[in-house]
Amino acid sequence: MDTQPLTELLRAAVPGASIDSLDPGDMPAIAVNREHLLDVCATLRDHPALQFAFLADVTAVDLYPANPRFEIVYHLACLGPHYVTAGAAAPAPPARLRMKVRLPADDARIPSVTALYPTAAWPEREVFDLFGIAFEGHHDLRRILMPEDWEGHPLRKDYPVQIRKETASWSPLQLTPEEFARNIRESQARADRDARGKSDRRD
Amino acid sequence: MPELRSETMTVNMGPQHPSTHGVLRLVLELDGENIVSADPTIGFLHTGIEKTAEQKKWQQVIPLVERMDYLGAQSNSLAYCLSVERLLGIELPDRVTYIRVLIAELQRLASHLVWLGTHGMEIGAVSVMLYCFREREQLLNINEMLAGFRLFPSYIRIGGLREDLPRGFHAAVTEFLDKFPGKLDEYHKLLTKNHVWLGRTKGVGRLSREKTMELGLVGPLARAVGIAYDVRKTFPYLKYDTFEFNVPTQTDGDVYARYLVKMDEMRESVKICRQALERISPTGVYDCKDYRIVPPPKDRVYTEMEALIQHFLLYSQGFNVPKGEAYVPVEGARGEHGFYVVSDGTNRPLRVKSRAPSFIACQALPHMIIGGLIADVIAVIGSTDVVMGDVDR
Image 1 (tube, each protein chain N blue to C red):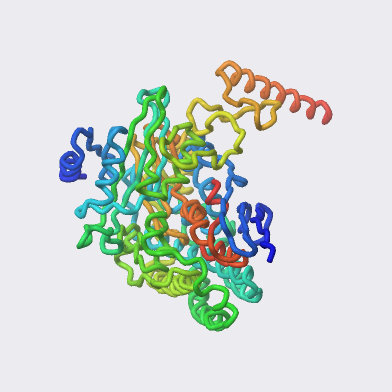
Image 2 (cartoon, rainbow over the protein chains, first blue to last red):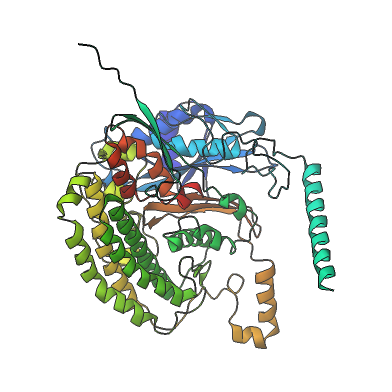
């Protein structure tokens, strides 16, 4: 996918931004640095030759243990003749774009794009909830899918999948690897014991 | 004259309210009957499907994603399979593509029928529900014929379909397609010019064109304000560009306009189904024949060592998907619906993320109901056609 005209246009419009072209194969993709994210988004949305007015989704990928650990992924689309942005005279050709911002593990924060794309409000809350990434400037950054008093961020790769813990929902669930392994051992032992108990009864 | 003291009242609507389509909770602030503020609260149905999917092999994810949007199950698995197949670089035979088109459109009809039935019932037209569920029953029977399972057939697999079409499939679908346009006319007779229906839906829950795009709403909600964006036309997949159909639009952007758009969509779906059915032979190829991804035919598994080994490998270890990522959106019953899948080159996904149209529509609810009456909330929720399984995942 040829993203060169796009990256050149963006570099000219947002001086100082680091814009790399990626090649995922299914659609054009770029990586942006978070300091210039909002300027790049504004250009993508309002430039008459681009008109990416539709933000389909905001999500994150946890690449633990790699660093930078998190990738925030934005899927944008220009709808061509179906939606012409306010400042533009003619429609731009329909196109899709994936935009990525990479974040280090110890500094997982990123500016919120809700001022430019109000639709990002809930997807950003979801990423905050499940990955623990702070969106600066978000007007209502609360948990959305998990209970409000939940601890930990379930979609992180170091969050255990199976946990057996005598717990109410507000006690911490972020286990250490040792605790996690012990849980598995104990539940296995319990299952074995149950199975033995059953076979004893059958005898 | 003493001043009349007034204050607003906060009302919890849901999560156990029959018209909130499952478990949606709306915290409404009311001034008399007018809505001053609204805050949708979701998450009651959150089951961590995306986390679970990361523990499963690629093929095993299909039953999971089908349970997200449970009214359009096969549109989920279709979107997921298309994304994974893009990563794998599989080209499918035309017959498989057309069967998938047919299934996707039948699924859209089934989903729209549930929408129409429940939407009508919530506003007070109870008989519509009985009419719609009568036709949906036939569609579920077709699902049962295909896969033995009515709601979540898991018939679409990575690399093709689970098995060939069952005997009598063409006859069953043809019978349905012949009858259905007549039934659609019946629904129109019940509702379209019904005085009560018009009163409850016209001018209710209106959105402007700009607001719709700002809120990221696509699909029927956007087509009701005149944004004629349809993934099938703008970013064609499954050779939809070879089919002849229209994208119905309206301009009013109210509940009634959404109703009309969806009703017209059903007619277009019938058209596509007919074209697809003509192109499908009753028996033939049903997968990509790449035995690293789909199981070899049973007669070879029983007679050839290599095929047997391949079969065991496939069911014990699955297959590896090349490192990369893909997002191939489809036009689901509720708008653009796609799965963003990321692979690290192993036999399990690194990340599966659904772009859920219901989630986005749910977010937009306050913009449609604030300033309106509390009775209209139900009409608006019905018109957005949110499926809570898709919202909470």
